[in-house]
Length: 146
Ligand code: HEM
Image (cartoon, rainbow, N blue to C red; front, side):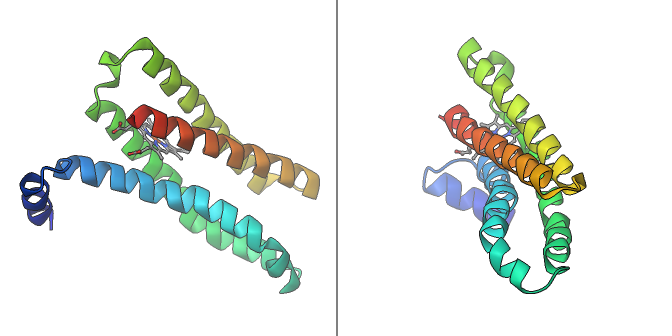
């Protein structure tokens, strides 16, 4: 598989096999973490109609997929920074990267507190913070990639 990627990337003058792997994994993880949050939020009224316990069960099942995706984002994010030699980038790029790191921390903490909150109001606020911070991290990521 990796060999085929190298041959295809070289022949067609595409990004290198390692860049394709690195960014595909980063984007796949962002799809699961952020896309999943948006989809579950959109399905919430239907999930609630399935029974009192349904939202908790769905949230737990989603957490088993979304948290590994979050850790994959961190792992591939570190790989991204190393691959693009972030320390040699402009100060503007590094400022955007720093803001993105703050957004990532807020995304993780907000989402974690959402899972621990006991009132509907607190759950909603922390879910909003987590999702908005993730959206900011995603947009800044696109800006960093150029
Ligand atoms: C909530 C978590 C995160 C989300 C949603 C996210 C999303 C993204 C997206 C969508 C891109 C653009 C990829 C492209 O256009 O090719 C990107 C790029 C990037 N991300 Fe993330 N990211 C996250 C976490 C991280 C972390 C934790 C780091 C560093 C430790 C990081 C470092 C980078 C870098 C350096 C790039 C530019 C890569 C390049 O130019 O090749 N990201 N990110």
